[in-house]
Image (cartoon, rainbow, N blue to C red; front, side):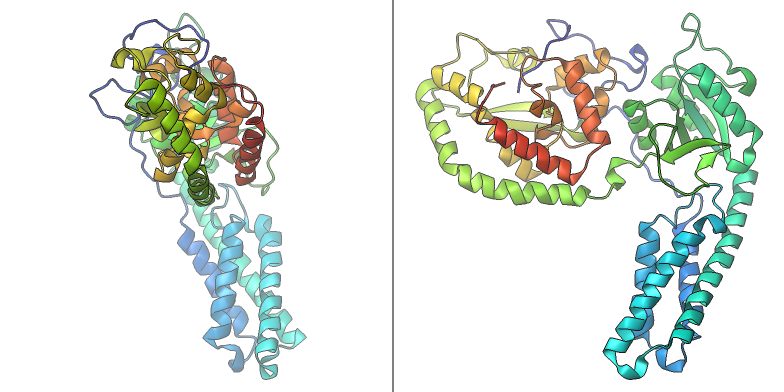
Amino acid sequence: MTTESTSVPSSPGPWPTAGQAFGLASLAPPRGTTDRLALPRHRRVRPRSGVAPLAAVDGLAVLTGATFLGAAHHDARLLLPVLALVLVLDGHAGLYRPAARTRALDELPALASRAGVVWCLAAAGAAAYSPDLAIGPLRLCAAYGAHVGVAVLVRAVLLARRRRIARAHPRSALVVGGAGAARRFAASAVQHPEYGMRPVGIVGVPEQGGAPRPGGEAGLPVLATTEEIHRAVIQNTVRDAVFLDDDPGLVTLFQNYGCTTWQVGGRHQDGPMGEHMWGHAWHRIVPLEQRRGRTAKRALDLVFTAPALALALPVLLLCALAVRLSDGPGVLFRQERVGQHGRHFTLLKFRTLRPSDDTESATRWNVAGDRRMSAAGNFLRKTSLDELPQLWNVLRGDMSLVGPRPERPYFVAQFSKIHAGYAARHRMPVGLTGLAQVHGLRGDTSIEDRCRFDNHYIDHWSLWQDVCILLRTAAGLVRPAGS
């Protein structure tokens, strides 16, 4: 992989500090220091209302419904599958993590539909198991009605208690966005404590001359650097961050602090009526680690990579032989790169050029057209065959098949200062190929464009998208452009 066109110093400069740019500090620390992100250690925060009480309500509802079926149906072989299926369906629907102002009536359709499916399956299963256990329609309707009635009534009590606690003990929050819109949102939250949120500051660029100014009606300070954000989070025990604008870098920062992150407005979101803050539509920004399919992504890497390494073995041997004959010993080139969450790892490539020293290897931008490159090295780069050893990095877990391309620590530091959102690329495992690469952003191309594509890929990731990118990458190999 090579670097792209942008304006950076020709020699290593000082590492950026948090105050040099709004948002995240540099992802890559100087050599000799920790190889982790310059971010707070991620910590989990217990949700405002735990899952256990609402799950217990479902258990009580199932037992209540079972009392209408008669003694013959109190067998655990019937009740345990019913309870398990209710827990799975309600959990998948998000009914154990309701919005702050959700009421039981808002959830009635979801609860009733899932309970109906479960009891119909239970009746069919019982009849198939033994005709003597067949459940009559009247008993089935009674069990279903009792289940729904208990679930709604008890949940109503728990949700009302949750709202009272939220009003009495609001959680500290920071509002991220333009000063004017952020002040209006903060004022709404202050005037309506029933939503359980108490804004303590606004994260945004100061409006006049770079000096922080009061937040107007809400009386809140404006925070403009990561040092100020850090102090505000610690001193005020901030638990929520509300985003009026998209800022992946700051989302990652607050999630690493353990804050719950919310997006106001944006694209249309399907959800219960209770998901709003005084008419401001919002939805939770789920951390990448908690999104469904992350295990499937790793499984996809293993399923594709292990056979690919075996099939590519003859090609790898031929490439290694060509490099050995043309450039001498040292077939593999090892280079430090920055991976997910700023972790450093050693990336493997076939050697296509022997740099004069370590400094050139770490800081030289592009070696395309270098006269020291042999014919074999030039061919490997143009066909991207020099990247094949990175399949071993994927198998080891350093990389994924699809993701933002990894870069060297020196350039990560420089790009993090210049391009907003560059640091946010490291929220996901780096990849052998990515959305930017299949759009032609390889080699000496724009960092800004590549950064935008990488963050778009992360924000809209799906397993099918990975498969599509792999297919497009394979199709692109027939007309290689090199790197």
